[in-house]
Image (tube, helix red, strand yellow):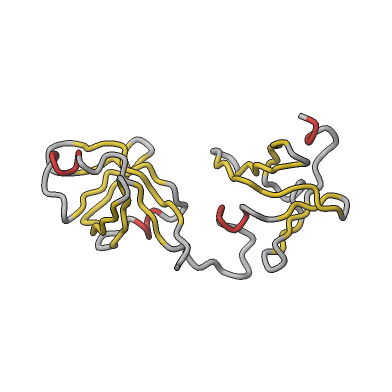
Length: 168
């Protein structure tokens, strides 16, 4: 089974021509919601493949028109649908990481495993790592000064937080 990541969610319908307001959860909306792209939606346990006819930015979200959705009534039935897709291939030389690559990494501090990455929060300026640190959740900004080394092959992340960060 191929792993899939969530790339969007229908918030509501828009207008009378069957557009849907989609909250984007991908850093590549121009690929995921490109004209002609097929995207798999899941809603109430059922899967449905939709074809993007067009998409355009709207108030921090996307307005997406699907070929299979002719009008507002049909678009309203998509409310709450979540879109999933296989992760995009990443350039091995890139210093960027997908959220799903970070979640589950063992966290190393002073050569000792102290926890595990349990989640990633996307904020306007940077990602924030949610780490289960010795049984409690701590938040660590995902910046080079605090996370100098990541080894995906070994499943490890080394952190060097400033004094007091892990005490909060």
